[in-house]
Length: 278
Image (cartoon, rainbow, N blue to C red; front, side, top):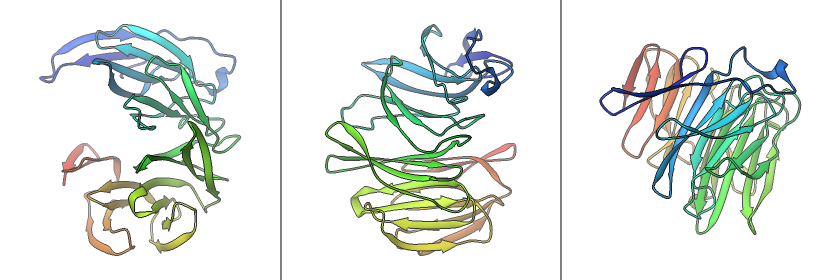
């Protein structure tokens, strides 16, 4: 996504493939919109062998595109601009689901689950008026499926489990500050939660507190890597922490990170104008 309302695709060598200019769809609540229908967040997946892209736009709409750049569907999120999205098999069916929440100009932190064709299949309540969805995490173990949702205030930490094909809330917490990251280790009965107050908190799957750590600065990112978590604060301090709360490694990054992603092999960090791999 780039410019006022443009969406472009490139191949693996960086050659342009197509560009699509998004046209605003008027909504009943223009005060929650951005000035243009700009593509704010993009995620993608493959369904029955066909790639698809889900795009969260500044006019409150989610849009689905095929690999040729043709818009296939449009769905209004309602509660603000859908700025937090991911594609994940959340229910063990092997089907890619679009998980979406309002992170920008949001009037509530509802988390919704869609099929790849834009049809809604579930809605997870998180927090109400003026809240935003700040964190979403997933966990699976022995046919149990979990989703953790974090918000910027109030009832800001929720753990859901899929029970009889319905998402049931197991517990919720009112933590100080914002929930900025969640890591679910379902196989070891642990849920780790990072907050803007500098806390890293550990609960079991029933919501019972196990341990906590307190750092000097707000925690901004929390990602799972090789059975541990990488916690990064808003100053760029990185810590590797195991599931018992032991800090195994600590290092200072060149600066604050705007984006962190994890694979089984590497951590990628966006710091300033540079991208680092660890």
